[in-house]
Image (cartoon, rainbow, N blue to C red):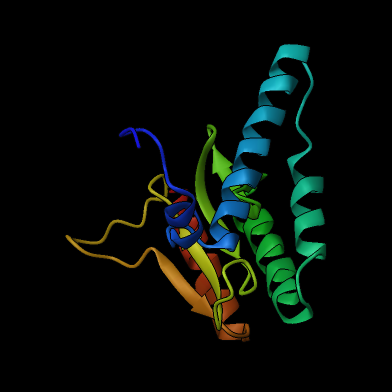
Length: 154
């Protein structure tokens, strides 16, 4: 066997990416391909409808949280543009994702996640959180999320 060939045995036992991770990468590839086609054709993305579609596909508990987070982001950071990112609802500024919502079903986790990417201005010393586990949203949680989103775009 040559160095660049993979045996049938090793190909079937490879345990690198999970099925969910591969699906997320395929979704991201499709998002990039769609964005490229839109640019070439002069079309404009309707990120909000794509985000709302992804939210509608979520299990009820995650969908309810994602709808609230969507509303909180729109209210507190209207300059952020909704888009999908690896098949998740995300919100970007100048094309860079600031925050995103990851359904618990996305990677079969026991909780959903509100995450902030590198473009978020959450720096606080030499260490700060960039993701938050969510099992439900209380009024206090919603207030904290609003504060985080405002700080992220400041």
